[in-house]
Image 1 (cartoon, rainbow, N blue to C red):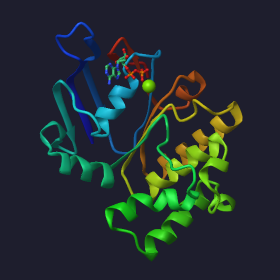
Image 2 (image 1 turned 90 degrees about the vertical axis):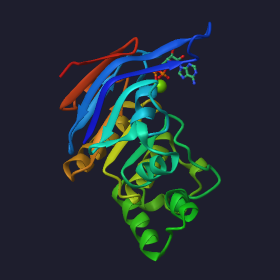
Image 3 (image 1 turned 45 degrees about the vertical axis):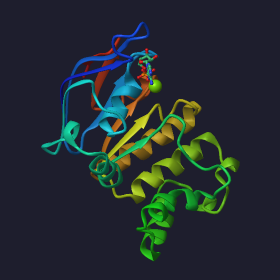
Length: 223
Ligand code: ADP
Ligand code: MG
């Protein structure tokens, strides 16, 4: 499903502030995989997820999604990829605090002009599924970190994507909430969603069938 070969990412090339964030990254992810990526702060984890999501492009190397060359896609095509195939949950969630959980979930459809009754029903059903049934109408800034994380996941699921990328989804959660989030992701994975999570939490990485480590921009498989 996903294939990266020889991917490099250089920020500020040939300037004094040049940073090699990714070096010769090779990665294959099959449909239905549950993958953890670990690594110290600054090792390139977010950069890698942003490239997988089509939010950023590699400086060199190739990225294929279902055989299509993402590096050659136009901005519009990459936007389609993000809307239809791959969802990314950013470290900062990207939610609007003053709007309800439900409104945050349906917002991409309102913006994209695809909002209708069916989407509203689906959003409510997905919010129930992630355990937010009682918080549907609450403004997001009145929800806990764990609940906000679930709103972000519900929004991704309402888009019917094939792949969910999550950047340190348990970073702001206590152990109990972190474990319950991982149970939810595992359940979604068992229902066919491909899941890639970046995490500092080794206990969580150990629960994932496939694991990689990033060190100074170099990716290696650890399980
Ligand atoms: P991680 O998510 O593992 O903490 P990042 O992918 O955010 O790592 O960053 C990898 C390296 O790239 C770091 O040295 C970081 O400072 C640098 N970096 C990330 N984003 C940018 C940017 N937009 N401009 C310049 N350097 C960046
Ligand atoms: Mg990061």
